[in-house]
Image (cartoon, rainbow, N blue to C red; front, side):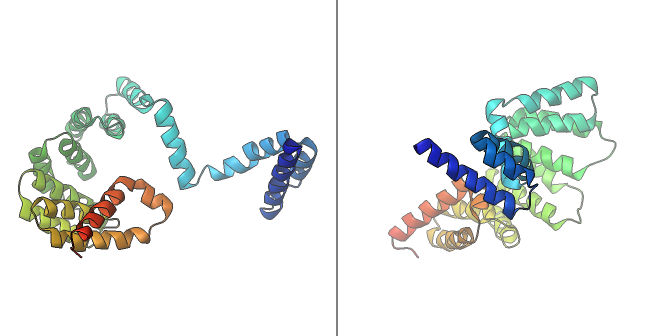
Length: 252
């Protein structure tokens, strides 16, 4: 009996979905007469293909592939380089290595890609700068970022400015880093710049200034949807915990 009841509920849900979304009415016959197998067929061949283009579904699918076969993209990129050692293929291999967190190897591939280019390419230099920074070579990243060609894209300029702020912070230029974080944080979406600025202020013992920034981060986080927040969950969780601790010390 429980199975029959569950089967009936699933059939009703699938039938309602079919009608509401104006799907082919033949699916109603499949759902009604084939019961659970019919519902499974409806979900597999009608619902899931329609959902595959959604951002959330793509993200989940990509994460699942990385979990099951974390080196697949790297292998494919290496095969492409073996077939044709071009700047594009070297850059794609660098991207795959960066995605896997292998930043030192990614930097090496980005350097090779840049060397194969006939002229300076800003996006390629920007990728190399990030890989240098993530692999612990802050001064090399800073030098690359300070000599980037001009860009007409404000969002790209801001991304480069955030990387430069991180680079100069790692190089010990704290006041310059704070100024860069404040400047780019006023324009960029998200709260990475504010969190990094707050973390640096805390390291310098300037807790009251950090509280104001973390309160702004808290306010921004409330306006994010679940998917947006999940992308930077660790950062927002750190900000919330840190702000709570600071308020517990009487800072507000």
